Length: 249
Image (cartoon, rainbow, N blue to C red; front, side, top):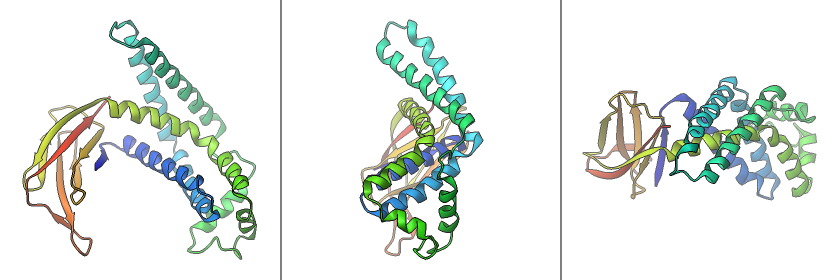
């Protein structure tokens, strides 16, 4: 089992966005109208995050920074130049699409007012029932193919965010320092010695152990817990081996 913990707000937001897109893909690929209802609710969540200007600014800056850093590797004889050029092209394309998103806006579909009416009702328990939103109920009776066409068209404007976040997170996960550690009596602490990391990964073989991470730029603390029969977390008191990965660009 692998757990990931962001160490700053920027990476925290990107991980949430990644999780939402993964969930959207799952429900989108199902056939039932109820699954597509879940996809629409996730679409609203993605839209909430996507509308944040700070996220788009952070992603744009990071894509540009990675482009500049990787471009300097062209002269290295140890680099696979074809793979590097492909990555640089992907970064450039992602940056261009993100810039277009800045100018066009998030939700540009002609159906946006109809979608906003669903979003407004979705905050009410049971608020999207047949008698509350008859037009939405009628849409749910369409074929799965028709519903998927609409769902895809509503998500498409936000795909540049997904692609940009994926590129940044992939590069971050590949820039890592791995080590085997022991949590003595269920607790592990490490001084960071001035190094700034952005993502922490914990791998543990036993599914019964659940890590909890706290920290700052000076130190990280990991505490392992177990769920009791009432699903309450209890501190582990045994020594516990695990793999620790610290990621930074």
